[in-house]
Length: 565
Image (tube, rainbow, N blue to C red; front, side, top):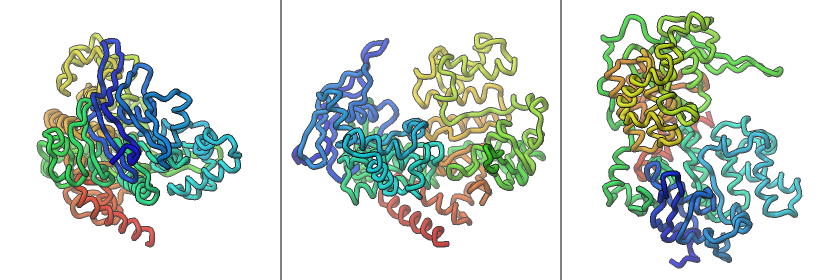
């Protein structure tokens, strides 16, 4: 196949960054090709160079980067070839959107909060065609929103990003990428922050673009289930090099490289067995649960004349000492709201919620303050929950300083060093700043901070959703070892059912603020009673292309059945 038959042809790409510690080669001799109407998935651990390679295609590298080799990009009609490494800034602006467009990982930060989504979709159209009137650009934006499945597009074209769900914002990003009908879309982790059902819808949309419009897609992801679901070909990167490339079915069936086998082996699967050291038996359960919710109601007050919103409706469950309770459901189901209410960060407005012997409905901060020492919290994104101006040691020491168990971070350093060693980080990492650690290392440090006060209850809110599979596996193994050693109870909030299957003793399934199903993890995940739980399970992508095709058909049938009902 000649270069003119390819949408993208990368040859011997090298990217080197200038840093305070000297030059760092992030990409070393990478060669990749993408054909029309095909999806090439580039996978690998964090730091493998996959995102840097993808951003090179759009000329989005920072000024500290130097690229060598060639990145040949063909226009959709095949009439023009460009080596993007040698284009001027003005030439690159003409190529972006017209020949190649990008769908970023986090739509909430990629979209401008002060402009409507219609304006943002039309912006690219106006930039490439000054003759286009505002009315014509608006109509084209409505058409694109309708194409990507935004409901009531003529009305929602005037919505702002905060008025849309996470899945809808990601659809808007795809609409922006499609506005000029480029031949290639670069999708960088487009489903990482989405729950399994919304993820399935986005993957269906990308598949439709490939099949109906012949769009080529360069997919950057660490989710091997997504690869099995969508990709035609797979390239595996490790330390800046492509170590293996093969058609998707061949790679999953018989990977050649040991690194690829290890990567696939780290993927959690439903029914893959527990990584818990042991599950607590019913006979061991204490007389009073660590957390007991009975008919819990949480309502947010109305503002500016709008009625209040009831986020949690009549939820009842318990968490015993030493137990891991997995709380699952789609975005907006109330999972994080319940976690925040247990921690005293959101007000419980009705029913009963007892946490460590304290009734949280009507609780006064003064009476609950002492109990906060017994509650740890691990946030979804440690990059944003850590203070970037403080060192890792200072961030981990914060709970000790706040509760006056140490006068300052220096006084808490011995305890901080113990915590860092417990989460398998060298003590010297305490002197680094958050941006100097990888995602997995930051999450380990976040776990250390959550355990700083030896809590009786640890609330973990999506702690592994942004991690690649091998790092996720290490963090979860560490979590289970520490939980077995320290005996804390845990509310583990996640949309990844495979993680729940591996960790949880019991599971609760939330839907629109209601607990539709709760019970032992094995029963809920293997013999679900509710159609909604069945749809969640069917929507979870698995790292097997043949099985994933069957599950995709089942999930579609369940969605259609719910819609008709």
